[in-house]
Length: 157
Image 1 (cartoon, rainbow, N blue to C red):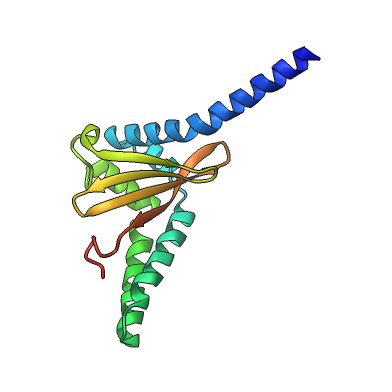
Image 2: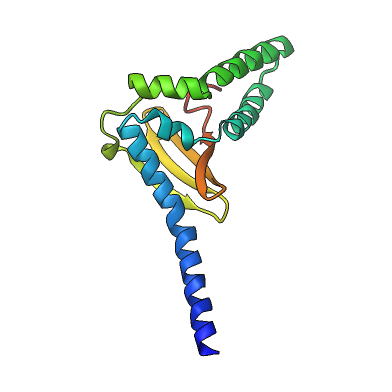
């Protein structure tokens, strides 16, 4: 009986270790993919459909403040088109291969982590203000599913 309890306790400890370690390992491999300009590894770490949906909801919130209905619809159309072009596998691959937007030394980036059972945030301090990459489990791995930012700090409001 004690043997079964020990095995059960060991299994719970292993599961707890996996829950804590897997998002940290995902963040580490994401950083390595950026540093090495590994486009395939970077693309594999992003759930593009979820990312586009998340940013689309942010766009809706941003343009909702616009008073002029025509300007609101034009702004939404332009931002949505930009999103569809930029949040794509081809764009990420192109950026990774060209080094556009890459930090010369990601070791100097100011970042922190935030945990949840189904969400993990990588909080980055950028020149434009704080940005958080939101990761969620997809199967046995963690992928970027959203971006949290303050539209005012990016000059969008």
